[in-house]
Image (cartoon, rainbow, N blue to C red; front, side, top):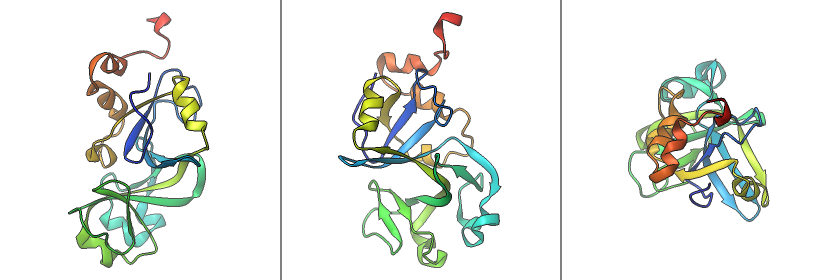
Length: 187
């Protein structure tokens, strides 16, 4: 039961039908989606690794918890940073917009050049990626719910209840899925 098409700025919420251990119970922010495929980051899998241990300059500016998040199973040795811009408008150096307020930060940019332009930042090790048509097929088979994102979803300090809370705020019957067990027959 998809509610919309996957596009940049939307959330993919894993349905109970999705059994791939990389994505069970995940909430993914879509960063890019077109005919060639899609890319996003898992929002609710913090790691125990402090950002300051890996990217010392960025440690003081990341949102709490100040740890790396497991963004997905692809390129886990690399990092993507998602930030919230203080004011929409001209993009600061090292920032690429995803929505009017969210964007990707080039981690090679000196922190000082972006500090006054951002009010939240989260760093993800790896990402989730889909080839051409793959995500559309997964949505059609019922593996993902596609729902609108709130900027606060990306920088939420407590992430264990994110999936439930995102589903709970959806309209109509979709909200019922916030409490659905993995196997309803066991209920």
